[in-house]
Image (cartoon, rainbow, N blue to C red):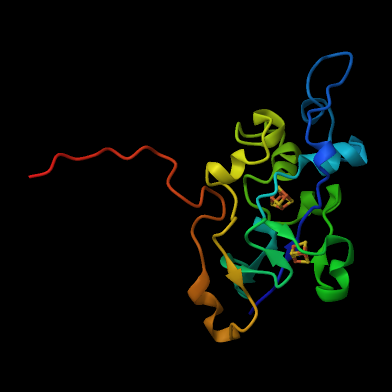
Length: 184
Ligand code: SF4
Ligand code: SF4
């Protein structure tokens, strides 16, 4: 019944700044396809949402995907990063390294994933660090899973479904301003 799918990117701080193409002044994600990007451009594209490190379930018959708030045992929910990205395969052999080919074929990336957006010909969201200039924006505005997840370790298979979430493709908290209703 289940498939446990993982992928995440390690991103260097030095790669956060937008890299503009000299002829057009347009940022690289608007002028290049994923296969055309340099390693630095590719790495800088990851928004660090951490959603690809969540445990996912696939219904065998319908192939329907369910995503949980259980995170991979190597994920740190406070930093929203892999604890040991260079050596992760030793601990999590099924961890998937994203490539343009994988982005084009899988159905388990959030609709907000920057790789998925570029592959689909869409622009990045305004909370993406390459737009906002601040790696914290995604967390402040509730689009990452920082501090919203718990480890998969110790959770029995039959209990995993209890952790299914409805915010995989959206913000983890309400970003809409709530209206204060008058008191009676
Ligand atoms: S879902 Fe996409 S943007 Fe988010 S952490 Fe994973 S690879 Fe990066
Ligand atoms: S090994 Fe690291 S990159 Fe891979 S799913 Fe786990 S936390 Fe994410």
